[in-house]
Length: 517
Image (tube, rainbow, N blue to C red; front, top):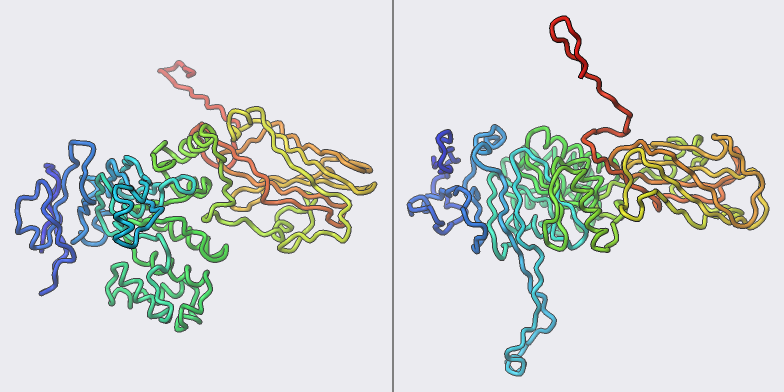
């Protein structure tokens, strides 16, 4: 048995490492690091865990502090190692790429262009520092090109940072590009063994989990077919199923929760929550603020390779939005992100309050009537502070203005509005008929304003569905969804769905005297 030397601490015993099989070479031959003075340790495959260095920048390759031998499974979650150091440390990490604009293919070209640099340097990461503790779920938030995936690839040792230091303690599974190790000519069964082996699972362990992998991927009837005949959804479901059945200590997730249909996505999120309950460490990458808010306890915000904010999800997301607005960049909609969980189809809205909102049950796409007598031409969302921040605070007013155009005089027209949360659940629905505001006959152009004196909601992004139809069960004239949304940010520490008015009274008794405080 080998020992993992630990950072000097009076309360920190050395942890036993798993034994090497007879004749089995160490997977890595790490070169001596500062503080490692015994060459025999390196020959035996023991990798030292160094305390954090005093200087801030270390211009050296990535250092995997527990990459060769690891503690017995579950040791990290029992706290033996996490009491000494975090499970992931990123210290002043930068990553540079070279973008080539010309390629010299001959000696003559090289001689002609001697001294000319045929590339430009692109820094994907600049001096990033972060710490992830055992059992934490940490999010990396940022728009496309902010450096999230590059940072995750550096942590997973797929990319080597140009400068800086990364320390990872524990077994790590990276869900970056699902199915990247699959061979198209092999069956799903063979690819499970191939991909799981690449992820570090032994054959006996794969045998034990094979049925669970197939069941999770929902591919029981297709597992012996070649994966080149799989659809993209089947392909990625199989890759996700293999990755989540590794039971790692640390899980890296890079925008892969938009796998399969809505039921499978829910199952994926449930598995991530199970990992959280088991005390595993998760680093979750996304540019969907709502998904980050649902899953993560702490968030780092990246922008053009720089770390611009860190904190609880609500505060970090608010800083992310304000930073984008200050930089004059467009704040991305959650619906456009690749990992956003899709909301319910239009047909499901009919079962979740269409009668209230004045909208009839529709198929997957709302069909236009033979003659669109009334059309929605524009929808605008207004609130008092729209010029200074793109979000609402709880209990602030909101106005939704719906511009319309009628091709002829139409009677008994009803305008309806519905508010849905990010999961597709109906939050509120009403129409001009239910609030007894008949429009009478409309003709030409006009506007209907839905004025909310107060939006008593907490953190979240909310979608609007707006429809125009004839009185009672008449035809639908126009339908608009997944185009208009607003966001609420809660500066307080309260949690939940609704900002209920709350006052706390405390009374104390000192002897026989009652003291109010």
